[in-house]
Image (cartoon, rainbow, N blue to C red; front, top):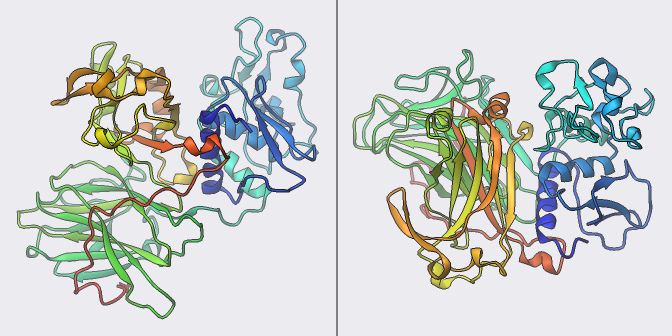
Length: 539
């Protein structure tokens, strides 16, 4: 299917991973099954509702349909979902403006009977990925749907991701008690701290708090509100080398690829040389109580005094625990390290993170049509690139370009069939409830814009670095300030962008990708003997 459209194939596979993260729905390439979905590149985006046709039920991802939300929309149709505005009770929430609908297309706005409308008694969802936009099928640019709540008039029709209510109904319909790839979330709202265990080695240890000396003053989950909690380990006392350890419950990987992603927020208010280390303890069998312990991440030294998003790729193939260690350095401290909103999943981590603090000020106070350049970043294979934001005061665009880097002589040029995904993170604390916004583009080796920047690029200088830069690709209008404020895109005023560059060249011959490659561990250090004896104690 879609043999001539690698970008569409790549986005469809991304959508499948979202279904796996948020539900028990899984997908696999057809072998000899009689009932299957045949994805085509026909004109338009469409699907039958539920299983209707044997021997290949057509689902079309045509031109202008290649976005994550649109793909999810069509597959939700195939899984049994009608449009949200087709609910039997829709007249309590929206008004259909029939006079603005194109002639012959009124049937798209028909209302279902109560018996055929699947609502699971869930509230009407203006933010459903299954809802039409305000002017869909309009013959005169006028609105075809008017929301009874005016604040949702410009928000219906979103195609970012499934909404939390979409996910709720999907899991009820398919009686999902678990998901394929989600392993757990902890926001420390309960006193049991998600069953975590503790160990102290000189420091006072990890404590559940709602404010900490030196910061933070609030948790990340309910930022700027009172009553939320986070875990904090102070480095204000103790000696250099003293530490405190916080250990998760044992996790059991189940997917074939043995890839996990740890995502969390941390706040550094300690000394310049204090460290937050992330370890993984992997157990070889049921009789192994000590496990093998390796460091996966060590935080940069300088305090940030703001909640920072971070991701740590893991590759456990056996039962494991994640361990958070705070280690006191040799400089004075009046604070420490705090962590909050931990998410763990059996999925690949985004490859790069770019956080911009106080983003609203950056957007509104810079000159119209000015630019913000990311640091030079590298793909997992070594391709160097930059993300560029084009600021327009009330909205911004997202652009991408390849730049010269230290590995260019070892890479294949032109850069062939790499799918670039740039996402602005919806910072809802629970990853399964996030509705992030993303764009994708695919490098085409026939385009000079994806050739070696040292050959086709121009010498430029940004952020104090000089390098060769290629032509830019992207979208001029990505998100507006109003859209960002309607969700958690600006948590504490800060924006987080996630970037991945994936080799999808194998999709030229097939419909699936190989397992992500395990990257070399940058921190190959085993646990100190004071910790490596076995698990921590529970409190």
